[in-house]
Image (cartoon, rainbow, N blue to C red):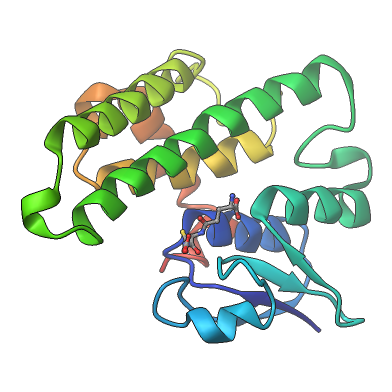
Amino acid sequence: MMMLIGVNRSPYTRRVAMTLKAYDVPFEQRSLSGFADRAEVRASNPLGRIPALVLDNGEALIDSGAIIDHLDEAYGGDRALTPASGADRRAVLKVAALTMGACDKSLQAAYARNHTPPEKVHQPWIDDCNAQVTNALAAVDAMIDPARPYLLLGRLTQADITAFVAERLARGIGIDTETRTPRLRALTRKLLEEPPFSSTEP
Ligand SMILES: N[C@@H](CCC(=O)N[C@@H](CS)C(=O)NCC(=O)O)C(=O)O
């Protein structure tokens, strides 16, 4: 059985776990952390980052985007979470880029706080990261029609999955998504009722 390496506290790992669940693909998970379990993580990813996905033949895929690209190809058929081509694909990839970029910046802010001696923490840099997160998520918030159950295309796509993990992480680093991105916050509440989301809560 395929083995997902990583903890669902990681937004990148969780998006892979949610994609596997959405495709109804059975998998096992080794809950390793990128920092605490670096040596073990390296066995699957020399870069020492999570997630990695070890396939049945032992091949290890790394980086959530590349892993999901494989899952779409193998299991997505004509209902891939990222559409195969055209305007629909561009729209989903744009939301994924905004929200995954927001995750990158949220983590940079968190790393600046947690992996830097207190006297060297440079608050203007953290503020700049937080502003980038808020602006990216505000752009996604503006795309949301509260009357619709999903962000794009009238069905679950990778846009919902990445927006979900990005909103959660932003909230985790102290951004008030309730007031800054209320439609996105409402969407993530609704999505949490669906199995791929509820069953992957860390
Ligand atoms: N672009 C990568 C980012 C992966 C990533 O940054 N993972 C974090 C955990 S959330 C990690 O392992 N950090 C440890 C490190 O960067 O050394 C992806 O999409 O998979």
